[in-house]
Image (cartoon, rainbow, N blue to C red; front, side):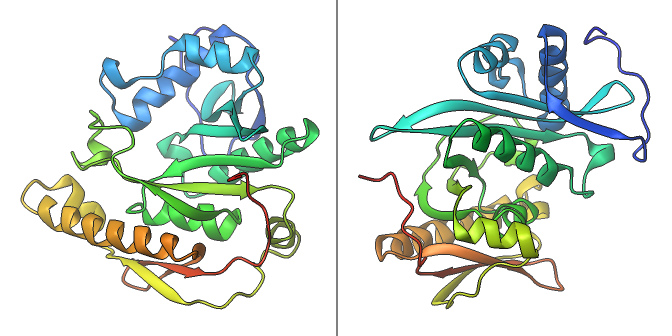
Length: 264
């Protein structure tokens, strides 16, 4: 089936998650990427990158419903201080299939494939202003964060980024760790002592897309940037995340009691 044809799907259609198998399926990933982020062509990850990732030990994993791609995850191999790991660069879910656990399903498929190939670590970046995504990464997958990059990707054409600097937290998903194993077995994170918290207002989404209020989002980003950089310099990590009844998010930081690191 070519990328130009998208048969209708319903959210309750059976889903199949597997590795994408050919150029036609990689083309569907490119098409869904454009649909989700609204990128101009300059910012789109091209077809050849999906092909290369598949050929050199990365991952292109898709979820299909009725023959249509409704989600995918793209990862490329990396190396740090002699240790191989996977960098999960992009995860996209079609709007009709969001808020149903598909993002977590794709991540778990990445983990299963990575474990089979001997990897210990999958990393990715995420916007610390994105409340739902932060909750998924920390509370549903068990990733930690202890690094922060300022304007990592520069300005992008995606409306989702609101013309703000692309500041990112780096999620470290230590897929063999006790933290992750305990979460996946019990659906609960191991207890930890919260030493400080960093908050994101629930209105951040509206502020980012509204030119009249974007300065409010920028102020939150700057305040939290300084807080994260200070806390990480003090040796603390993001270990938990809370969502309030008003839609606000709250990063919980403390000391991680496991010794997983490729820093040296």
